[in-house]
Length: 327
Image 1 (tube, rainbow, N blue to C red):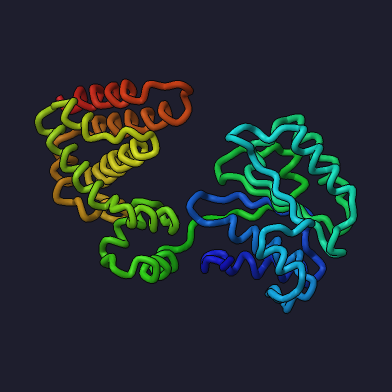
Image 2 (cartoon, rainbow, N blue to C red; image 1 turned 90 degrees about the vertical axis):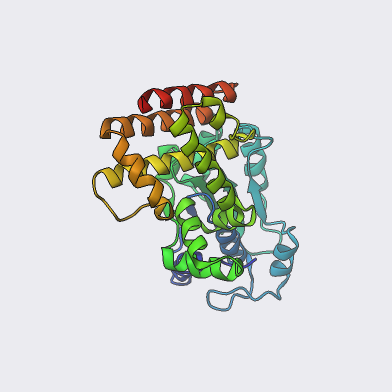
């Protein structure tokens, strides 16, 4: 497993702290999606398990390294959600039972908890005592989405590392290597649309979503001109993930139109669409643009947060409300 370039500094800081004897027994990684942070965590785990480290690098030759590479190291424990359910107390108890034994390879033991925000309250409380009174040579690597709420008592026992998207230049350099046939202009558009999250951007480009975006927003323009709800409704995808992406395109279009209305020319998400955004912003009031922006945001929340929602009706309701602000 190879580190992504935007993780190198964090990895170096972490391993350096351990080399200086200041490594924390519990590290909480709060991360945005699409950054491949699991790679970083697994690299840190491999380094902690390696019996012949070379500075901040693993040796790749010792038995621990070979076991890690094969994915069957007996002293590496993964705790994660099963079938999308919360992580319950039985899973935690099973893990804690394993930690009562000595490390089979005679070195460190590493626990990787994916989605620590998915721990139930009972599971969190069961884990808490171990975090408060850690066993010697046992290290916890916890991962949670950036915006999620982690139980305060858990977070307070950890050293938190926030993993944000890389700078535009670094993201672009990586994407130019990974997507060498895509033009620089298209890469710049895609990385903005994907909020500088390189792995999401790579998938976005590989699935030709730039062309899909262009076609979808052309349909939106006809919808705006003709007020035909079904015209845009039939352009929406059937999968929720793709519907949310299409709504995000609309949201960014309204956001840029608001900036154009206020004569802000920087930090646009869609500078390639300025020939449509400028006239759109001129024909609507600030109140209308804000109203449209909020309608789209509410639709995104409804699709994401409401269980058993009829997504077709939600989208249809959104478009009907947008027509009203165009009148």
